[in-house]
Length: 262
Image 1 (cartoon, one colour):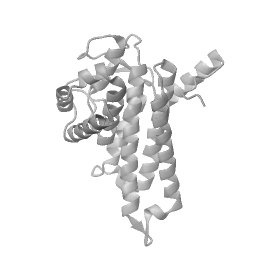
Image 2 (spheres, helix red, strand yellow):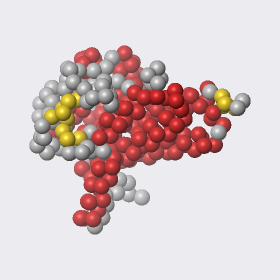
Image 3 (cartoon, helix red, strand yellow):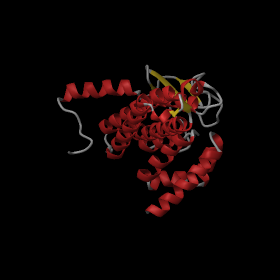
Image 4 (cartoon, one colour):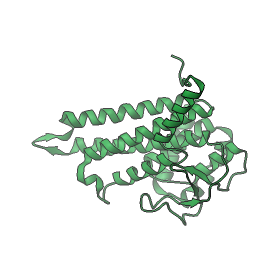
């Protein structure tokens, strides 16, 4: 897929995700050839689809397809997925369940403890989703601080807010670099999702501060992205859990994997 084809695909996907979510988006992605894209060009399709899910705030059951592909199982099914805290969940394909009050839009339901599954590809995919969610929050906060004034000055002129926006931007750029550099091994996928989770949580914290009380209201989009980041961070291991796991690996092996050879 060349640059022009990728740009056209991104435009079509963004338009599709802006207008649909859940089972409707599952059907639309199938019509656009998502199964074929995943089978033939996962290196292009997975980052693009999952990042756009985050940026648009929509959701689809495509994580199931990524994990099933890695385990060698046929697509179209679901399987239990590990969640932080030792619990397991299932991402159902019919919008009939949700994970509770935190993000009622996501069709997650608690599942019995399942067998260990290969999750490296799923972690990388979730990392791109978290990155897109973080970028959506930063865009909302940036627009707010540029448009709103206080004491006769735009909010963007206050140093404290500028520092928060800059720290968020640096965290997201670092997470994207980590995801781009991550290889096919479990260790780099672990580090990439941990970086993306931390970046998304950093974005949630700083952008909430930038928007103040309006960010908590149901009328503003920020709260939806904050809830999404919290839920996705816990799926297949939270940033905190994965950081501990990386530390355990370091102590056991006496070294840590390098994402990029400097």
